[in-house]
Length: 185
Image (spheres, one colour):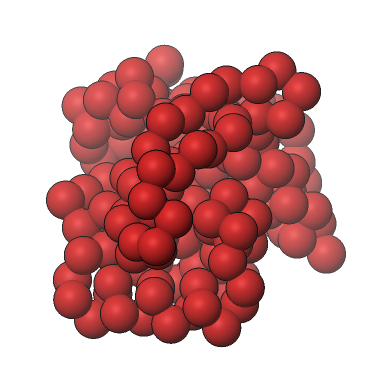
């Protein structure tokens, strides 16, 4: 597979072996960890039935990991080589508000709830919902000191690694915008 970056459209893929659909999908998933179904369909130029069939086979063969989010009906596809912790973190880094929280905690190490609310510029209930999700996923740690809760990252070294490798491509920006839209509903 060769890849060219095009300013106006993101990435253009040229596949050498058009008959090997599974290989094409594996390469796309490796190139864009956390890619969504619709983006896979668009890039691979496969219809829904064919794409679904090949993704099911790849998942059953443990060639890919599939992360299905319960509350938001979001499914993301990852290479099998990515750890579970990294898979979860990559998913949260694709959501604008959770990425803002993770970035703030990475830069400041510890933050209070009020600092986070001010930084993400969301209602306290929205910030609380995101913090609860991040806490349940064991991305962040909540510590109570006196009457104040402070938040910190559970694994800042992994976050540092991901900040160095996470692509903010057209696909990711589209996913970020879509996720933000869905969260607002």
